[in-house]
Length: 265
Image (cartoon, rainbow, N blue to C red; front, side):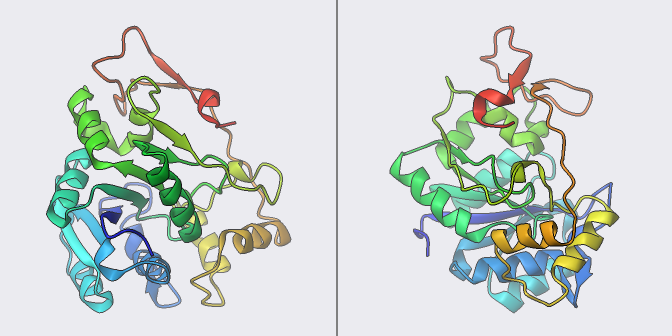
């Protein structure tokens, strides 16, 4: 169980471009979003879990899932995810929040506990990890730091790329939590659901309806069934592209983030 002042925000909406309405796609009769909720409820209180969606994505399915599982539902700004999360935190009186992406149903719940404990102990602004599977990594944020980040952001509508905003040592107190590596280069493997082929992989992983499968079990499945495909990391990430602007007002002649400095490899 987590401190009641910590909220778990499932960030989701329905207008995904790569795989339409993917969070509502079903595996064994349960949607991706529902599987994520089931996994979170195995470890956390109902009142701490919030489906945090866009006011443009209002859907009866969200309301139905909220009632079915007793979790909370919040609709906020469509593009300014900073503001959506801040408003949700204010409404439910959270001082720290766990950011969970709705299309990552295999988010590691044990990692949430370990990372949150570390976040609170070190009084961090932003706690992250780099060596779990892509698609299983939560992020922990202090709400006051989130407000500061929004105030400093040039483009609040690029807040989908929140990680890039926070990787600023001089601006925020960062905390990287390291987990044991079970197989080589596990940090370069992905179980995030972005495309149809990844949804097909998820169905294979969950074919036995073991929704509470843990991180190591997922890794062993990938290894046993030869689904080991590495994702190539770019070391230097531009702060400004045609898709987003993750620069802060305090960035003086800083055009890139060196991910290796923050533990990515």
